View 1 (cartoon, helix red, strand yellow):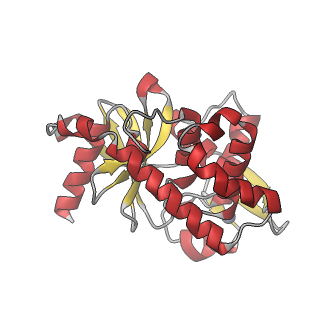
View 2: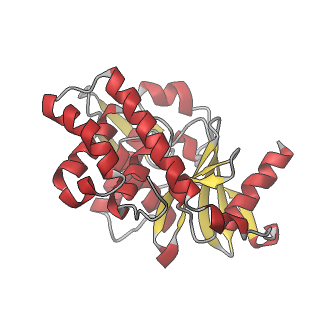
Length: 267
Ligand SMILES: [Zn+2]
């Protein structure tokens, strides 16, 4: 961003946030971004699309995404993220500590549903059996990494368990999943991922409103929470630098920040 007066293109920022929250950029995500810019002329000519498009255009033209281009993309995205966060600095200054009394911290427990599902694995064509009562899956990754967590733990949700819940959402609307879980499932299934198995997931109730927060090995915490207008969204908070990715924060962000800071002090 050349100057602070440039207004970022909101759709592009939402798209970037959607694909880059976890700090790991994969090839599919770059293709999704290229496709988004290709289909939205408006997004291409406005920042940050104007910065991304020249690079992505080349990728799209020759249909090849080299390691070099991946690294370049990651660099440009990281710059954009920092520029967005800096634009929000004045807002950060007015912060005073909030009380932790309004927050209740619980372990999140997956709902137990009397259902099994056969979930095909997209790249391999292998089919895995998921049980939504025991939150188990027959895939090797589940046995390797997730079986050790107790029933109900989010960490048991590999990509196939997520897909099985997603199927419940679409085929069984009469028995809706809890709103927070429905959002997490939609989000993960959109990105073709399971729940981050290395993170500790906590359910924060801020004034009784549920927030799901990860504390993992990475310095970014994922936060599923209502934003402005009560719509659930996924946010990312950098615990060491005390900032929200792209300057986008949930409506009760100060409580989440205070909780994460308190965690850090205790660690
Ligand atoms: Zn699985």
